[in-house]
Amino acid sequence: MNDLEIKLAAAKNLRHDVLKALDEVGVKQRKAGVLLERLKAEKESLSGVQEQVNNIRLDAMEAGETAIYLPAALSRQYERVQEIDALLAAATKRAQSLSAERAVTDAAMQDADEAIRKEAGAILSAEQADAWERAQSLWAEYLEAVREAVALGTTGRAAIPWNAISGDLSQLTPSAFEALNGAGKLKTDKAREQVRQRFADLIAPVGPA
Image (tube, rainbow, N blue to C red; front, side):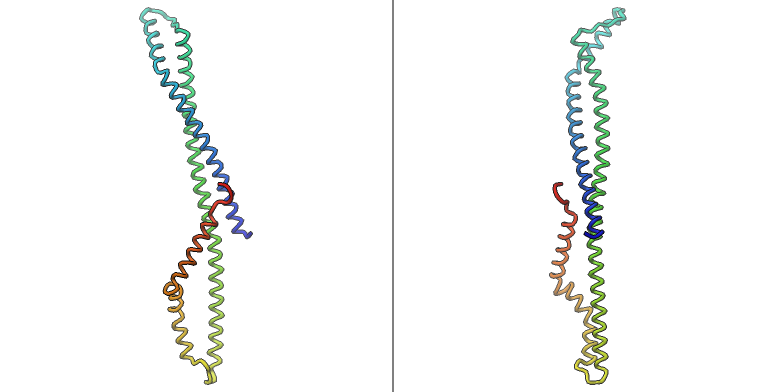
């Protein structure tokens, strides 16, 4: 495994860690959401308690009484309403905190995906540079062979005249273009598709997501 492949593997490991964190925060969000809805439902079921307490307070004030006595059942319900209000505030704050954590983790996942694409692209870019270097080396070798052929025809007894050589050279670029984008376009397109598939394989997660 070369340096580029090591970097790609590290990027995939990081994404795996971020994905795990994303799953964990998702579980927390679901649990927090269920609890929040349960508290809201319970508060709704006790919606008349506050009104009953207020009426008792008003009756006491009208009677000039300073002490307020609530029936035991109503007192327990009122205490529960106050407890639910405090819990709802805490649960809402937790839900907001988890939403912020989820946003940060989502951003980290996008960064991890981009890092994988970047490292996979670096691998293909390095291979492209190698292929281009080979092409340039072959071109230099080709030119030296042509130079040798031209020199060997110096005596006037050449098997291949200069006109034939120069004619081939003048057609070299058009014929190369034709081989890549003309008659050979299907072959070029197939090679491109193979590279696209290789890129997809490079960025694909390894093992269970």
